[in-house]
Amino acid sequence: MINAYLNIKNALALKNHKIIKSEAEVLIIHLRRQMNFSDGINQPTLPALNKTLQEIYQTVEINEVYKPFAEVIDLFYELLDRHEIKNLTLFRQYCPMAFHNEGDSWLSVTKEMLNPYFGEKMLNYGHIDEKIN
Image 1 (cartoon, rainbow, N blue to C red):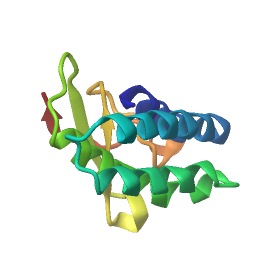
Image 2 (image 1 turned 180 degrees about the horizontal axis):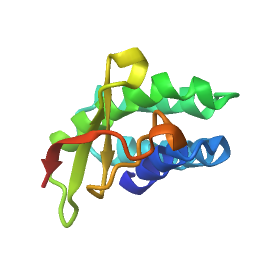
Image 3 (image 1 turned 45 degrees about the vertical axis):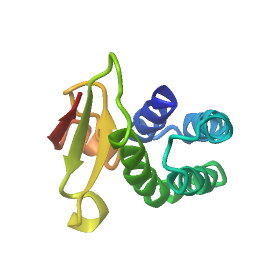
């Protein structure tokens, strides 16, 4: 699930809508498996995450991805925050200029910035808010 999320984030930074949709579908499949076989995971988070990923999958243009992607970040972070992640360090990164200077976060496995909100214009813009694990 983490790899599919990261692929969506990276594809958004590179403005590749085809990969975003493909990886959203992969993440939906993994999430459904998780919903069917995991009682210990916060159940209200999983359907909300599934719904938001469906919105991403159904987008026609890349500009439609940003809002649901921001929701996925919050839901995915909530899910990860409640469960121990072994052998993986994640960084919660932040861009203060996203959404007309309201700011927003994303998760990354590297300290290097790959800003999903501005692509080439500001690909390396942002800062690390938190290290997870």
